[in-house]
View 1 (cartoon, rainbow, N blue to C red):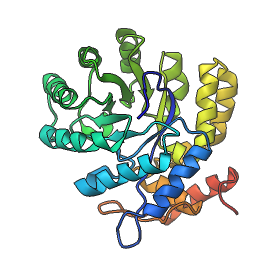
View 2 (cartoon, one colour):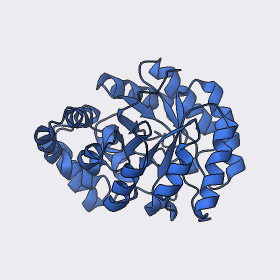
View 3 (tube, rainbow, N blue to C red):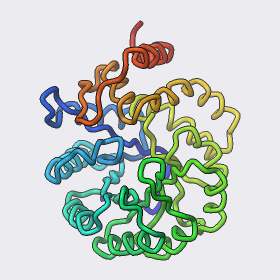
View 4 (spheres, rainbow, N blue to C red):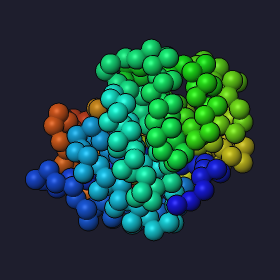
Length: 298
């Protein structure tokens, strides 16, 4: 387990590879982890939204986390997803993850039941009190219908082991307000690949990225150029991958990114319902963009 006090850079929101029969593809997961580390990724985030965590059983969730820790071999930190709409269940999951050797937790806001701001505060406080692991909050109202507002984040940041937030609210004004209210020690990660540059300019420390599944090194290069305030060079690199960045969300995440990884030969293209494969037209566009980047052969 690493001390993640200085955690920054790019964390890949890892997909969960499945076999055609729906089982977890453990060989493909190992291949994906090693690919990520060989491309200099800063940290790994298994079992989040991109990892189809809501379709995993408790035992499958724990197995994926265990395997990622095992294959990472301490080379990079592992921040495991542990979120949901039932606080007691999230606490049980977090307690079972804690002994697996992860370095922290990423916990999405409760979805569907739409708690109040006080409900969100009490949910996260209960989680933080149940484990010793550092916790990164995750705000993505476009998927959860719940928006974790800046004042609530500030309240939560006073809890010792709540160390940061993955912010994917999509509202730059809210992000600016948040950046002005949190302390410099509280870690602000972009949850949107397209907003790396402005997020770091506002004091962010990196991104938890979908696109890094396919192009981890390029995402690392862009982010670290921003740390060095070399924004013109970062913009140039971002322009080169922006088409792929957009196509990764032309259908529900992680449908396109898993299709792309399958084209690269890293995983089988297999989903769990209610997710289904890409439409033929969108698949053609995705493949074309990946050919342009040299990720797959024409």
